[in-house]
Image (tube, helix red, strand yellow):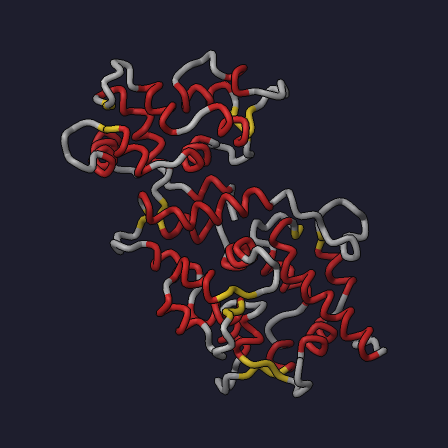
Length: 347
């Protein structure tokens, strides 16, 4: 996966003037040729502006980036509250909001942005229209599920699902009708593309305005959790804060994983059991005979610990960090629990 800034759409190859006009029209809800405070505030939240202007995706702003946001080259020291020479998202949030950004560019103080006054707002908006490909390239469904699972139980309550996807979709997602939706149940119905399509209410292939809110919220959470989740100390043998492929491969074998997670000991997994840790594409690859189950042999033929590591390494940097670790850590502790309960080593 490329830098997280790929989450936002770049300016298209068509005429830049026409592109700016198109975007201005999307913001100008009443079509009066100018942008009101309400039109801007209903279309852009400050966190969207921060992500759009953070061109290197490092979570901090330079003096030039602050100038892009506020239009004042002298604002940087005011935002740099801890005097470390860089401005964090939190420092920006404490120092401004979208209303203040609007007022900064409203040069004649008439409550509207007209002509050149609107240029920076239109630029920010151009950076936060989310295309389907950019969302799929910037996130994985596992990251989304883990970030949204605030109690780390691998499932969502009826209320959590209904708040986002509605009551009808809860009934569809709750495959075993136990009142909660597991990661596996969610993956059985939705992949990340389906999630995008759900929020793309006008089916125009991009997320704009309120369509973005849930995706932006989860993205911000993923961004904040990226460095906040430490590597598991039992797996992180060199204590460098991230899991290497060697550390994971040396910690457990794939047979250990399969035996420890085969709850009924029948030597195979149901679709939901597989989807707890893999996507639908992998399930179809594994289920060679199409019977709805994946045997140990079918699973071995498709994946091992090393290739599973690669599958989870969403950014391809050779390490599992932050939310990327979730599945490996869960499987590892299942192996430890199985060995402790049965007094055996499943190698």
